[in-house]
Length: 175
Image 1 (cartoon, one colour):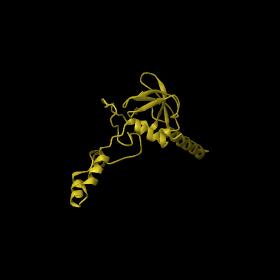
Image 2 (cartoon, one colour):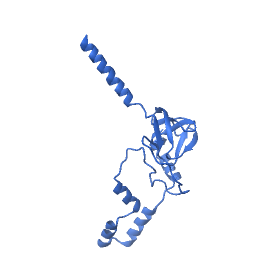
Image 3 (cartoon, rainbow, N blue to C red):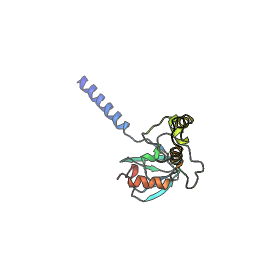
Image 4 (spheres, one colour):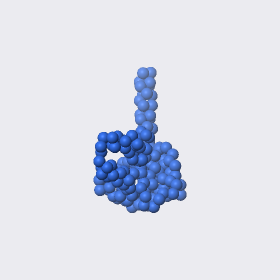
């Protein structure tokens, strides 16, 4: 009898731990400049509001990669998990209108994609001085280097990113 009680207690503790591990966090932060609060947990549902990066959200529920949240002003709705972070995010300070936001693929906060800080900053700056010198020493034609500079200087707007994600049915658009 004693062994059955111990096994039952162990089973109960194991199940409660597993259930608790699958619970969504109680607080999340908006990690993307173009996050939309939706009426339902589908990208095709009506947009209720645009939520600023760094806004703290209270989590009410979680469904199919979407959080049901409550904004500080009391409004509730659904937000895609790729637009939020479980760690605090700094608020955006004066984004330029029509400027590039987060590069080609936008802000990947909340994503499982990770990059070394050195690699990321080098990508943002373009070719390193070492790579430029290597190209000169190895006779890479100037026309190729000029074309590469054009690619590196390319800016992508938030609207273009959103259209790309919709067309490819990526992230929140994969209904």
